[in-house]
Length: 226
Image 1: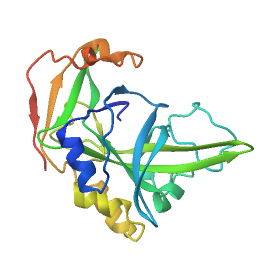
Image 2 (image 1 turned 90 degrees about the vertical axis):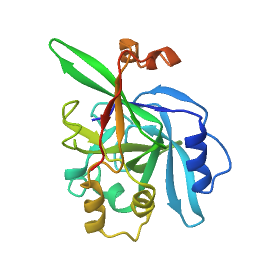
Image 3 (image 1 turned 180 degrees about the vertical axis):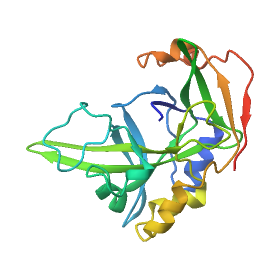
Image 4 (image 1 turned 45 degrees about the vertical axis):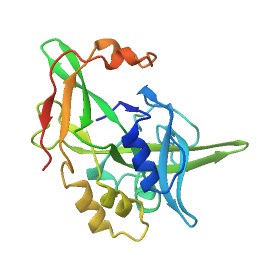
């Protein structure tokens, strides 16, 4: 699973936005947590667009907006059979750009947070999204797609986000991409080398948005792509 990530306004993120045709930058956001607003890139009839969405999917058919069920991650293995996820999977796919994400490794009775970042460039998480409207209330919300951790990463956690290359991201957003190809993309493992570095337990508090939560407390471990 993935319950925290970061967006840093650096050259790598600016380069991605320019490559996708956008002429603005994301402000830095640290320790983003579920239910917060996040940028999602999707394909529209007019080209690519970015919408701010609530990171906790509310299906269009839901009677109300709720956090009762964990809907910020969506398992790739059941996307096409889940009542909540199958519609968005077929018709509303996007990507969530990120500079890094946080994962916790169990150590004895506690957990050590790790910052996971790419060796080069930025991350693009596969996402699904939906629209919910009732009376005068309207929201767009999303979920990050997760899969079984690649062998090089399962020492850290048994799940990981589906991380896409630029070409895969374009395929993922394309409504014409076949279901077979989408399943292939979700099962492809790591598209690039990553680094995992232990960081301050201050990150445990989703309310702490200061740079101090990303303070490194050890040497990076390389996680090779496969």
